[in-house]
Length: 385
Image (cartoon, rainbow, N blue to C red; front, side, top):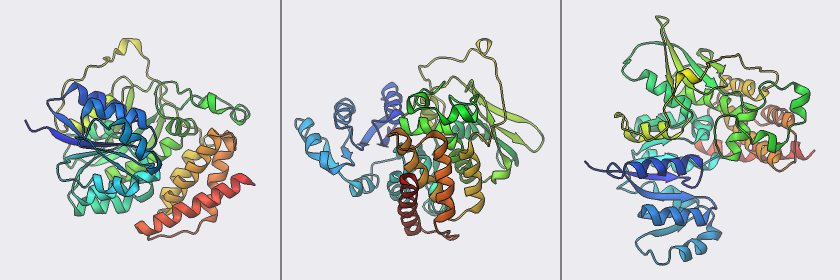
């Protein structure tokens, strides 16, 4: 069996490290071709020593020398740095699959470069489809590049659709944990701190995504992603707050049947499913015991969690509106983590930014880049006032 050559964009983050655990369990099937990180030089070097990729890339060019020193005794591993190196490495001929686990808008450009080379995309970077869903889907069709979802919710829907052929879908049921504040009043939400928000009840994720989960912006992004991944309009996507995170999402078909994918909260499962698709292969992990869990479902509170409503509004507007949403969210997310804005202020700043940045119904890649920069300036200005 030919091993699948995998490039991991963002190998030092939560998804990247778990992906390496999956590869470590199946060295007969998967091989690391390239690892990339933004700043975490020591961990990147440690991963490179273990998995012996052909190349590593550190996005922060200022840390290239440090990485070279750490790998000085490994001349077999080429060291590159910078955004252009990220774009170029994913085009390498031997690569079969690219796991896009970078966080934020920065993941868009290398993903586009990989798609143009016909690579299979294992998509964990939400911003790629949130910002540029129309462009990405068009490019993927043109270059025959498969996009396999890695988010647990989209992977669940993908698994539910397997074997259904052209069976019409009536509704997608997208589950959400509700985050740590689902039972908080607005008054209590106004006083929460970053430390409160960083304690997610069921998932272990990076800081940015954990804050997005607390505001439910993460779920809003997933609604936008689902529209593009599965060709379903937002009106047919329903968000269900499911605190136990056992039902990862479900599909309702036109005959009323509902198929759901269940499992313990473990990101290695959707990562491995993307890597091995269409096969299922063994995974050493905890097994679900349904006797130990009750399954509850609630409607999301759009007043308390305004970010979710703003995401629906952005996808209804279309064009560059989701790009504005994402850019403003990245600014306020960082601002909240740094103590420069409050929890409820995040949605207020995002909404004002969406109203102030010029709308473009026919956005191109260049438009997205310009919109991203403008929205960040506007959001930062509002946050500073």
